[in-house]
Image 1 (cartoon, rainbow, N blue to C red):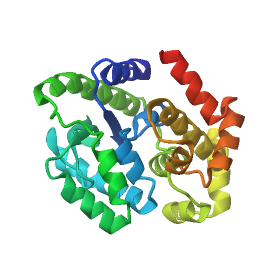
Image 2: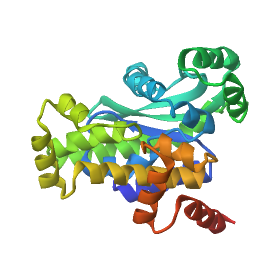
Image 3: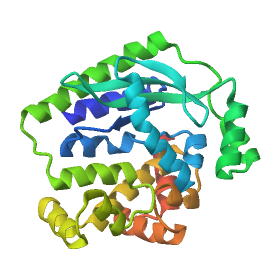
Image 4: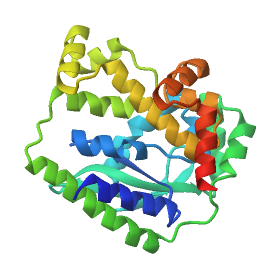
Length: 280
């Protein structure tokens, strides 16, 4: 099973079936498949995107991914995340081990006001802003039987692809492990010191090995991840340029606009306008 078929099916589920889904591969993320699926690693609803502008909140979401994986390892679950968004979660398996999960989310919880009050108090978000964004979530609960029918084939496709990579003997090199770490953390500000502490390596070792194995610097790879993520948000979300800059790990909107134009040939606003024209 190749990445093209998987991506085509994911796009079908999102565009034709109206599912707001995200994929989270936490283990055994091979270079090829992990790279192809990176654009689907983020919840796209405005409420979640807004919350993750706050670095502490982003860290909290990332930390909880391992708990979600543990909770769904034996089968699909339906629940509410710590921010108050209802979701259906399906395990992704390889060799009978849960290595990630698919989240179908974007649904309001009947106790949403309690969650929003907690988010406002703990992280300092303006309550009125949270209420307005939460109101844009769907009040209609998903038909789990319908979602099961649509998602289980994707789970099977991912399992086949992951096991094929493993059977091919794909080595979990230093660069692959570092890429996985960067994919999980690229939407926040990362320093070389933090990366070195995570991998117990010196800056020179990280820089040399990563470039040797990938042909690019860590900074260039991070920038590419952030620009690709920003382009997707410009196409799919209503966030303004400053919000997207912060949500994708850039320190300022001006720097983001400069880097985006250099890589994409258009400013963020021009890119959004062009994408909108294509869909009309």
